[in-house]
Image 1: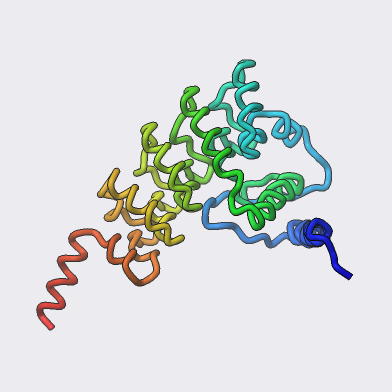
Image 2: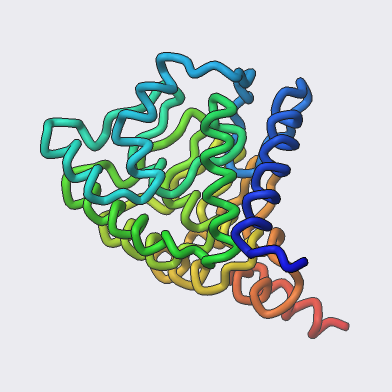
Length: 248
């Protein structure tokens, strides 16, 4: 019997959702490297804050729904308004990390988006870029920090969204801002091996190469060995390496 792709996807999605709900009910939930906030205890019930999120500009931005974002803004919604977890619409438009989600509802919404990505290869990326562009042109702050210190640059650099990184920098986003781990956007791009993003950040601010995080690690030390690591080494490190090679 041949099973239609839609049936396979529906079965897979339902199975993963069930497993995901069970996992999120556990008390020991790992945190992602994008945020240092504690995870809220998930619930099968929708809270008032979650209802506000669904109806507000943050949900529209996360979905890449440009028309709804425009409509809400035209009705007077402040583009810099933060949700109950401290996120602005600009941050939401770049995706919410698992540890920042406040309920099973938002977890499943994100999971659905991730499963769609598997089949469409970031088909919604252009929509999110359009939302980011509109928000920035409407006066949204380019460098709002989450409670964990992450900025839109951190998120877009970590995900390798080169067009969004470029857009943020054009709107004067601060590439030197660090999150609670002391990591800059360059640290995030380096650990995910996003070479083009690294190059763009370095062109904007060469000093990022010499900025260590709280573990005293420079961006090049987070990149895999190879061309990218050599590219990210600050000038003084390269000089020391040359001296050592000369002495040996």
